[in-house]
Structure formats: structure tokens, C-alpha cells
Image (cartoon, protein in one colour):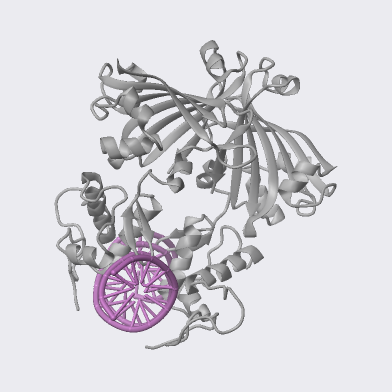
Length: 262
Length: 262
DNA sequence: CAGTGGTCTAGACCACTCC
DNA sequence: GAGTGGTCTAGACCACTGG
């Protein structure tokens, strides 16, 4: 066999050198990265939905006209980024938030002792707002654009522990109501994923220590000025597009935020 | 070519089946994992020291009598775990804490605005103690064993921001004195690595919000009961052996703990 | 230029799952 | 047994580094 098997942008012809004449950066990228991009597009477009099986490595290799090894390397990276899940003997599945495995990734609060919690969710408020400047900036939308605002309290084993406020882009979460949130069983990101076609891929959190204000103290049944963990999160979907701003206040008397540095 | 190239534990002879007669789990593991283990041993034993170049993939493949691809996969994982660093055209290097790149991994406190900090370290105390029960448990040593205790304050741009206490196994950090710590320029983990042959590989942190006590308030020039981030860290070296317990109190008025969920 | 890690291919066989 | 991902090999060529 010899050169140039692909229909994709060939980064190097058989023998000859690299960039032609003319301008600057020719935007190199290895074949497997291009394949990874194509697969990601199919994920994003919904060609394969969360929880579903994607085509086998052999099929994808045929579709893209590359070797199985190249597809494999692309999928390896997607699996490392938690976009897909491989299961030997069965196939590769689109990752989903409807799984015990996925829960712990986005809620790092753990009980100091004992097993993970018996969570209980109370929705306090769901309404539409014009995005405050700061929220608009974080969501990369225009200040004043419509956002869905949610306020809720989470209890673990009966003890109120988290007060949380969320802002979501109104355009994406158009039909989101308090009823939908209340009646929905399971993780909120699961609802976002199946009902609104928006999958959270990654998030960045900024953590501080703050004193409980009156409202929060009331909601958590604690004294005014009790130290709380303030957790500000921005979550991103495909293409690093921000689609959630969240501010949580965590009572850490019997819980802690668990983090691994590696 | 045909079967059985290695001298390592062959998981499967040419044609025939798996586990022989007799007892239970035959402790399978793919070749590249065994190679990874052997390389890790060489790292741990100091055959290749932090910052040094390790043998090339071709050399290692020859040494272990496996293909380059197998060595490659082993090193890929070691690189993903930050035990080594690959540099195209140059080779693969043993990871070290003497690098800007490595600093941010183990100090997640960032200024709310502006560039990373102008750190300044003040050692308050260095002494030998008998390990308190809790520390002994975390370090996996016997209660009452010798530990080195360190207390220090870190300031960023002149503002005292972190009060920290550390406990280190006395056996490993025998010659550690206040002078050594004070005169040493650069990251503390760098000193541990070069002077005591102990490299921190990973760490687990538990984060809570607490109120400043009198002593801490004094040290950080803040009011009593100011909310602070309490960060308890246990750090591990090769073989997941715990070698550091640390408790930091972070003032988060102008800084925040940055975390990526992915 | 030689040597390194990085990409890509092709083919073999293994372990696991399901029918 | 057929199909999947997982391992391993062997060989080619590329991109980058340094003498």
C-alpha cells in the first residue's frame, strides 16, 4: 500500500513538503483529530443520542475511509473526555447524565461519614428574567436577554444543606417550568439532556467561603453568619458554549467538597 | 511473525485457553500495563531522576522485548498521570515540581482579578512531634511515630492569605529544618523531591467553610470569625503511599479556589 | 544529518457479550 | 458463532530537535 488514503484534508502528500506558498498557518491537524471532530459533530447534531450505541469502530473506519486504529485513537480521546463510554463486547455508547456513574462528576459534596446521600430537592422558584449583566457575560449572551431563573434547596437525609440559584439561557430552555422540574425524577442534567437536547460537558467552579445572610440562614435552619461554601459554576456544552450559571451555598458542617489533584 | 514475544508473564499462549487448573484469579494484566509497572519501578527507584531523560521508546522496547507500540501505550498512560513528560524530537522526561507548569496543579487558589500571585512564604514553626492519632491514620503510620510539623503563612502581593499546617513522616523527612525551608527558593514540593527523594504524585482535598479563630485572625490580619476556606490535603507518592498531611486556611476575599469538573 | 516522539496502516489474536 | 472493543505487532512515514 501507499499514500493518501483519505478524503479529508491531507496534511502531507506522498513525498513532498508542507505548506504551499501564500499566507500563514495552514491549520494542521492529525487525521485522528479530524475524525474526532466529525464524530463530535454527529454527537452534537443528535445523530446518535445520549445512551445510544454509536457505529462500531470498523463501520466508522469504513465510513471515514481510514484505518480502525485511527478511529480508535479518536474514540479514545472522546472516552477520556467523557463524551462516550466504551464497553467491551457491546460497543461504544453516547455518554448520558442518567447514570449513577455520572452523578458524582458534577456534585462534589460528600458526607463526612457514611454513604452518599439520600437527596431531596425542593424547588422554591422558577421564573423568567432579563439577564443581569454579570450572568449575561458568563453565558455569552446580551445583557437583558431572557434567562430562566431557578432557586432550590437540597436536603440530605432530611437536613437542608444546599441553597442554589441557577440561570439558564431562555432561548434554549424555553418550556422549562416548575412543574417539569418537580415531577422529574433523577438528576437535573438528565432532564436538560433529554428534554432540551443540551448536554453539559464540563464545568468550571470558583469556590469561596462566605457568611450566611438572613434568607439563606432561614432556608438552611442555621445561624446568621454561619460560614458557607460559595460555589459558582459555569457549565459548558459542545463547542465550549456556556449554557448554565449556578451559584450554590453549601453547608459544610457534616459534608465536605471533595477534590482530587492529579 | 507468530506468538509469544515476551519474557513477562504471558497471559495467553499461542492458541490454547486461559487459566490452568487449581485456584482462583490468575491476576491478568495486559502487557503494556506490566511495562508501565516496570517503568514506574524505575522511576520510583531513582534509576531516572526528576527532570532527566528516560531511554527512548525504541530502547525500552528492546530492553523489554516488546514492540515500540506497546511501550508507547505504557508511556502514554504515565504521561496522562503526569509521571513523565513527552517532548517531540527530544524525548521523554521524568516529571518534576521545578516548573511553572507543575505549580498550578497543587495550588488552586487564584486571584479574582489579575495575574497569578507574587507569593511570599513565612515559616512560623518547624518542629518534631509525635503523630496525633488522626494524622497517623491519614499517613498510615503508628500513632506516636515521629512527624515533622510545619506552620507557615503565605502572602500574595503583600496580603497574608493562607495559614497552613503540615505534617510529614519523620522517617522520610529526617533532615528537614526551618533553615532549609527558608533558604530554599522555589516550590516546597521541589525541595521535597530533590532533597528527600519524595515526589508528590497526587493529592486528595476536602474543603469546608469555617470561621477564623483568634490565632488565625491575628495571622491574616482579619476579624475574628471571618469565613475561611479550610482545605485538608493528603498527598501521595509512588504506590499510593501517603506522605503529607496538610491543613490550609484560605482567605477568599480577593481569591478563589478554582476547580474544573470534566 | 541522525534520533526522538507522533501518526497511520494492516493484520492477527484475545476477552467479552449476546444470540 | 458472530460481533464488539482491547491488545500486540511490524513497518512506514512525518514533525520536531539538535549537532
